[in-house]
Amino acid sequence: MASTRPDLGAATWRKSSYSNGSGGNCLEVAQEFATWRKSSYSNGDGGNCLEVADGHPGVVPVRDSKRPEGPALIVHASAWSPFVESVKAS
Image (cartoon, rainbow, N blue to C red):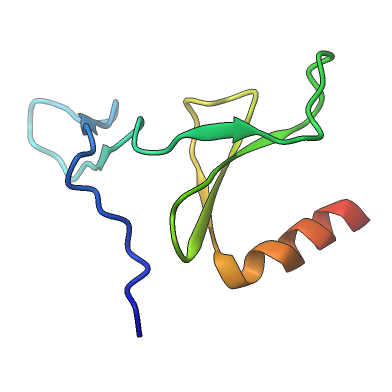
């Protein structure tokens, strides 16, 4: 089975804002790893839309277009279509 892990070798990492000088258990994020695009349902009125990042085999990263600095939800590719259909039905 082929790996669905993205290659993060060229990613630029930054330490979480929750890190401190004591070396606590913190994480780093690769904020610019993904190239985000706004949903085709977005408009100039600032509707409740999301952004997706293409080009990551096996997964679809999703985030709130109004909070690009916020967290991203990683959806497995096989769950993406059912996820979109569920959102449309809401």
